[in-house]
Amino acid sequence: MSSTIHDTSRAARSARAARPSSTRRGAGPHERQQRRMFWPFTAPALIVYAVLFLAPVGYALWTSFYKWDGMGAMQWRGLRNYQVLFQDPAFRTSLVNTLEMMFVGGAVTFAISFALTLVLREMRGRLFARSVLFFPCLVNGMVFGIAAGFLFSPSGPVNEALHFFGVTTPPKWLSTDNLLPMVMGTLIWTATGYYTSIIMAAVDQIPEYLYEAAELDGANAWQRFRHVTLPCAWDVISVCAVLWTVSSVKIFELILLFGGSSSAYPPVSSWNTALYVYTEAFPQATVPRMGMATAAAITSLLLVTVVTLVLRRLMRRDPIEY
Image (tube, rainbow, N blue to C red):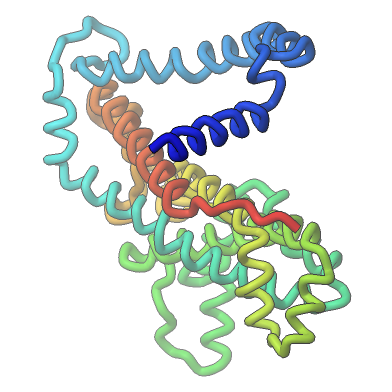
């Protein structure tokens, strides 16, 4: 029994000896100075963030409990706006389309980005290829919406080319059934180069000897990507997943340009939550419903928050040191 106590006390003394001096005797002067300078440097950014983000979100949350046309008196409705929101078929369709863009569009985008990363790392002219892939990100999305509307119109160049090759009944590219896939295809095309460039920037930081060791062990290109590139660039990939989650909810101008006109909004089957918020706040023939619009916006914000937290949890990995 005494030997056990002696061993325990000796282990405690060893732990105290191994503890950093700053912990035993308090923080050092440099650490205390860092703590004193924390709030003076972070307070301005926090104030700007609170004024430009937290305050509008709080006001939108407060507005979502009222019936309001944006001009007159506000009438308290409580959670009634949210109940009506989820009973609205247009919002349910918009929510499903948003989730489809987020997950299906994201899966396709990152699958293509990974394939391009696998190819670009092995090719000589990868810097030029990366510049070409990144170019669509420099152009406003409205340009691509207008261009796609022109190219795929019933009498556009795509259908004319199909007629030339003998296709008498080309697809109705911009019909109601094909509108959402067309929007998603354009979105994937414009976003793939952006995420490929970010992932390639992380790949450039991976030491070359890891690839050389894998190659000496007989690993092919796919195995090198799976066991070297993917684990070492995982932190950057998880950040890209969060960026995609946030940006996929904000798609607005592509849908409006593909399916809208000067006198009508796109069909409801192509809406997402952002367009639903817009149509509720700025209807064409009815009174604006700002309470419903803000309720839909708060729901979208909660959706993004939950998906982001789940993604960060699922994609959490121990850092790799090399």
